[in-house]
Image (cartoon, rainbow, N blue to C red; front, side):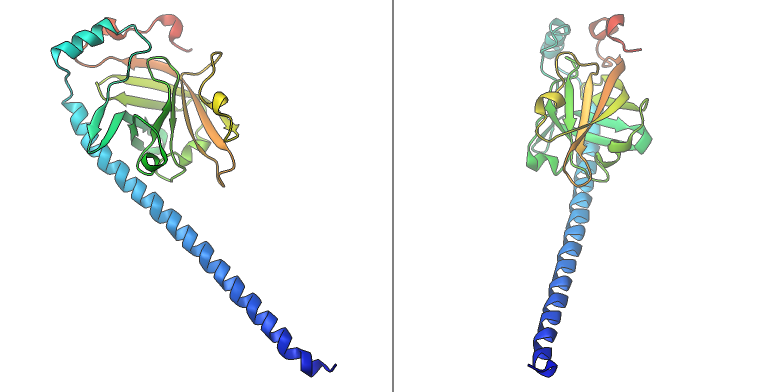
Length: 234
């Protein structure tokens, strides 16, 4: 068979490869655009919720019955964290990461839909020193936390006006299935964990923090929120 007779078949194969390559490039470009747009919407949502949440936190004063309940429960580590509802969502406060100029509202419960808007409580409470907060790997959410240096300060502003100040101790890389390791086991050496997906989503970056200080709400006396010296990590 002469080369002239097989040349058209070769041309068709080459054209098919070019078209396939262009389609794959277009699909990759669309995915990148979608991810950036998704992250942009998440940033807008967080700013919206944070604005109204901070306004409500500024004027937050519980009624007398709730204040008395808070006093009676002030030493109960299993008490529920106070929350404020903004729109249809419930929040425990605002998480601040000064190194990256982040201030993010934190939702009281976690599911896939909520994570599209803001970081969420995965498990635990700040009362029990086993709080775990998760967020997507968005640029303005937890993306930069994968590289936060040890010693960095992180603050949680609770809705009742209390402020919990933490220090980053280490970053662990865990498998997505390592739920027990992520949710702070009994022999923990940290008080709060923030986690997000690593680049590519194959693992989880867990930022382990210890509490350094806490400030009580304005309407409560220091004795109610006083932390034993043995609990302050040096």
